[in-house]
Structure formats: C-alpha cells, structure tokens
Length: 382
Image 1 (cartoon, rainbow, N blue to C red):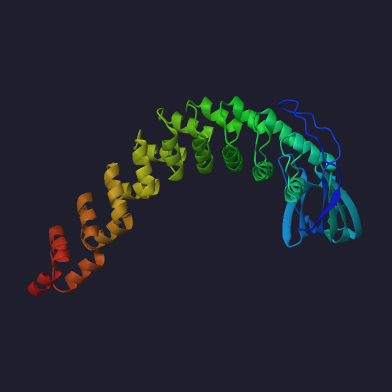
Image 2: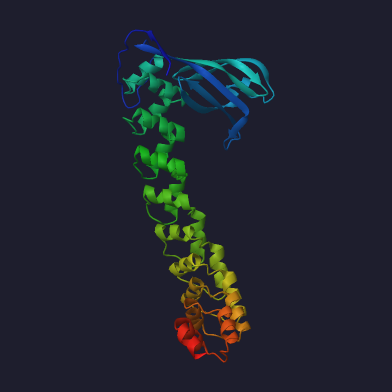
C-alpha cells in the first residue's frame, strides 16, 4: 500500500465524558494514498428513498477497494453519456479524495490521491483510538467511519470496538440509532450480534413486532432464524387465525422450512382434514401429501384416509397412477395396507402381466406378495 507520511507534531488527548467533543489540531503524521480508480455510471443501485448510489473501485499497490457513493456527492459521474476529462473531490471526515481522469460513455478511469485530515487522527485519539495505523485511517476513509459515527455508538454504550469491527459495523449499517433501537427493545448485544441481525434484517422494529405476538423475548439467534426462514408477524397471526394458539418459535420455523403455509392448511381443511396437529402437517409436507394427492386418492374411492396412511402411501410410492395400473390388471379396491405391502415387495402391473403370461391366473393379493418373496419356488410350480 502506497503511503506518504508528512511530519507534524504530536497531539495531546483529553477525555471529557461519554461522548467527547472533538477538537481539531496537529497530529503526528498525515496519511497520503495514491492509486487508480474506475467507475461506471450505468452500474448503480438504489435504496428505499430511490437515491442512486454509484460504485467506485480504487486500486493501489495491489489492493482493491470498492465502495458506493450517493451520485449527488459526485456529480461528474452521474451522466451515463459523459465523455472527456474529469476532476472531482470526495470529502470524508477522515480526509479528502481527489480524482482526475477521463470519462467515456459514462465509464470513468484515472488516478486518485487521498490525504488524511490531521484533525481526524487527533480526534479519533480522543475517542480512544490513539494508535491508528495508516491502514486503519485508509479503511476508515473508504468506509466513512467518521468521528460522529463513533461518538453515536459510544453514546449508546458501544465502546472499545476493534478497528476491524468498526469497519464491519459501518459496512452493514449498524449505527447509534440501530443500537438504541435494540436497547429500547430490551437487548444488550455484542458487535457480532448487531452485525448478524443487520445482515439478516432482524431489526429492532422486527424484534418489537415479534414481542407483540406473545412469543416472549426471543434470543438474537431466534430472531435471526425467524428472518432467515420468513417467520414474520403476519405469518404468526395467520397461523393463529387457523386455530393454532400455542405456538413457539421453533415450531413456527419448522412450519416455514417445510412449507406449511396458511394456504396449505386451508386446502387440507377443505378436504376434510381439519385441526390437524402441526407435527402431522409438517410430516405431510415432508413426504409430499399434497391436496392434489389427497384429491386423486379420493376420486379412486380412498376417502378420509388417515394421515399416517397417506404418509405411508407417499413414502412407498402408492400413487393414484399406481392404483389405476393395478386396476387395469384386475386388482380393484385393494386396501391401503395391501397396496403399501405391494409396493414394499415390488408388486406392480408389469409383474402381474408377466405372471399371467407364464400361465399363472386367478392370482390373489397374497399370491402376488408370496411370488415377489419366493419367486423361484413359484416358477418351479409353473
């Protein structure tokens, strides 16, 4: 990494309370980084406020750093059809980036120079970061870890955070307001938990909504698990509205993992399976006992089949198609248990046709199973 150090005098740090006021002043050294940059005005993204963010890529001494900037902060890069020379600056609390280069159809490239602000280095020392390395200052500049950002975290009790964790928190949007939100929800959290909840969208607002649903005070892991699997407050209310009042987070997560949606429960209920225990609903989804499967069985005369039998039929491949094929070779109205036994022992329509072709007629269901188990003995009888 290419750094130039400009000599200055040493700053004296003074602590004035939980959120000290930062004063500018000289510092021990000033960090300068030089390298190349490129951008593409067509490569952007938006946030909820529809503000466009343009990505900048910086390269220096083999290192690659990318970050996004609101396009109103870098007006020259807004025009997707721009051509010609370009010069612009980007101010950070840590210092200033100066960019020079060329634009071609909205794509930019050139050289940059970053110069750290001595007051920033001194001010960060007052906040407890007295031994920042040149790399720390550079990373803080790239990701805009400002003094105000650190002060806001410290005001909420988040102190002595490692420099790498500060960058991680900044990247993922964990700020003082976010920490305060979780404190108001009754949580005291580690840096890793704060970042984890932010990554997965388990926000303080989400935690508050979950508490309103009567699920107690979920752990951070539970909140994250709920977000990962889509257990929303709306989902909880929909399941309760179907008569399931005694719910816990693990059960709700299990329902979502296996696709036990309110629509599935309603469809099963319309076919006569009402107030099915949640564990049975999960079992049905795992083994593919769908409303379509139940309808198919009902149309063939297998009505109101117990759920355990429906599951057994699906596990062993007793489908409506299989039943129709067995009827075609003369086996009608076979009980469910016998159909399952057939499938376990490999009895199918092809076997029945082969046996008839060898002269075995008027075979019973027991005969078919016996042949499947003791085929060689039967062939001798033929």
